Length: 452
Picture 1 (cartoon, helix red, strand yellow):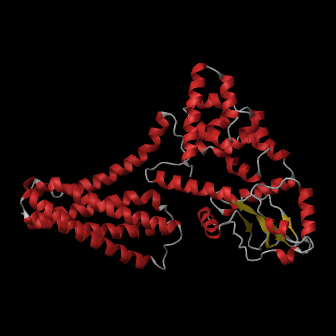
Picture 2 (spheres, one colour):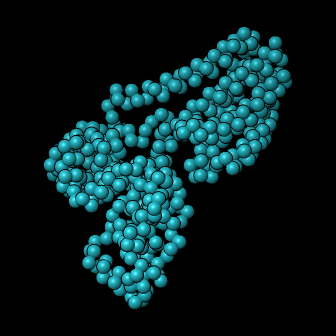
Picture 3 (cartoon, one colour):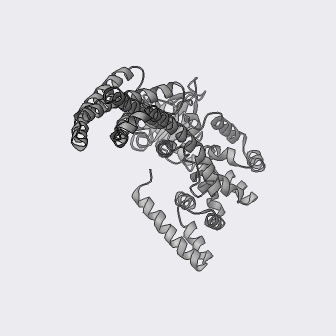
C-alpha cells in the first residue's frame, strides 16, 4: 500500500502541476513530469480529470511511456493507449520486460501487437507465450521468465566469470537458480554466498536445496502468503515436471497485496479497483446502478417483513422507534464475524478442518454479547417508555438477532467460497438482508404475540 510520504508527494505534484497549468508553462510541466519516477507519474495521471490527464500524457517522454502504462490501472491505461502515437507505442512496448508486456497485452491494439511480436526473438516469443498461458492472478501470470541459471558442477569462480559475461542482471536478483542439463530445478545459489565463499568451491556444495518452488497454477494470493511466510525476495516457478519456468520477485508480490486490498474494499460497494476515478459521469453512474438495484431489492425484502406487522406498529408506536436498534446491532455484530472469516479465508487460516470450531466460537461470542447488550438496551427501553414488557421484548429480540448474525457472518463467506463466489463482493449484501429480516421479524413477531 502507498505510504503517507507517497500521498504527500502526489498532493505536492498536483499543486505544482495546477500552478504550471494556470500559467500555461508547458515546458515547465514537461520537466516536472519527466523528472518523476514512472510510478509517481502513473499515480499523478490517475489523480487528474480526463482533459488535464491527456495534456500531461502528451508531455511525457516516450522513453517512459511503457513503464507508466504498466503502473496505471486498466481503465486509465486503455484511455492513454488510445491517445498514444502508434510508433511511440510500438517502441515503448518493444522495450518492456516479458512479464510487464503480458500484463498489458490484451489492452494493446492488434496492429501494435503484430509489430511487437514480429520483432521478437524466438526465445522471447516462447517466454511471452509461457506467461500468457496462465491466468494473470496465478503464479504463472506473475512470473518473469527472464532468470539466471547455473549448473551444479561448476565452481564459484566460473559462476562469477559467467555473471560478468552476462552483464546486467534482472532486477531483484538475490539468488541464482541451479538447474541440470534439462533445466530441471535443483536449488538456489545465494548471491551473498557466491561473493563470500571460496571461488574453488563447487556450486553443488554451496547451493541450498530446501528452497521450495511454486506451481504456476498457484493463486496470486497464495503466492503473497508464501513470500510472507518465508521472507523471500524472489522464488522459482516450476512446471509439473520440475522444469524451471521463471521467477517471481517481491515487487510483483507487493502489487498483489495492494491490488487485493483495493479489490476487497471496493468490491463491498460494487466497485472495481481498475475503474477510473475521473471517468465520465454517465459511465460511473451506469456502473453503480446495478449495485444500487441489488440494494433496493434487499431493502424491499426487509420492508416486506415490516409490512406484515403494520397493525402491530400502529398500535404500539414505540416499536417503530426501537426497530433500527435491533437491525443495527445485528448488522454490526454480523459484519465483525463476516470480516474475520473473510480474512481467515484469504490467509488460508479457515477451511473445512476448523470451520465448525470457529462457528461454535462465534455463536458463543454472539450469545455473550447479545446477553450483555440486551440487558443494557432492555433497561434503557424500560426507563424510556415506562414499560418493562417492552424492555424484555427488545432484549430477547437482540439476543436472537446477534446469535443469528454470528451464524450468518460465519457461514455466508464459507458457503460463497464453496460456490466459487468472492465473499468480499456478495457477503455484505446477503448479511445485511439476513440481519434486517431476522431482526425485524423477531422483534415485531414477539411484540405481536406478547403486547397485543
